[in-house]
Each structure stands twice: as structure tokens, then as C-alpha cells.
Length: 86
Figure 1: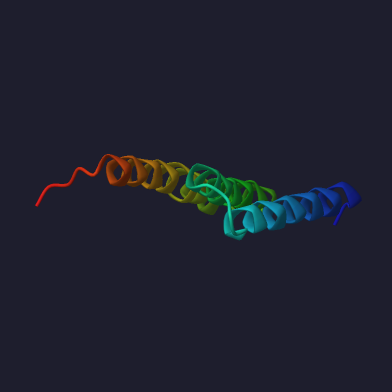
Figure 2: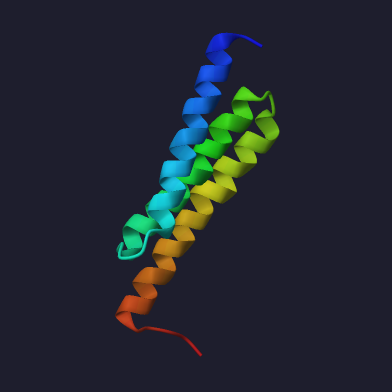
């Protein structure tokens, strides 16, 4: 393995740990928590791409980072407005 690959992997893992801690740190408001969890998924997809798994990387980016973050913001907006169907 090359040195640059190891350095990039360590930087990505460190950034994922920082974003994960931001997501679970008490006292944060919900939009920051949602963005931090989406960032963890996005950084994981970059890590999968570096590990030569492009299919897993695209799935993680589309579902884990994109769709889930959008869904969380959509639900947060609905809950704050107090609208529901039922």
C-alpha cells in the first residue's frame, strides 16, 4: 500500500470520528445533527471509493448521505409545523 493511500484513509477516518461526535454531542440543534450524520455517510462513501468498491460507494452516497439526510429534514420540517395526515 502506498503512503498517500494510508494518509488519506487516516484523514477520512478522523473526519468521520469528528463528524460522528458532532452528531451525538449533547446540546446541538437538530439541523447540525442531521448534517453531521449525513457527513459521516458521505465520508464513508469516499472511503469505500478509495477501497475500490465503487458500487458500495455509490449506494452509500445515494441512500446513506442523500436520501436519508433529505428524509430527516423533511420529517423535521413536518414535526415543527405540526402537520400530519391520519
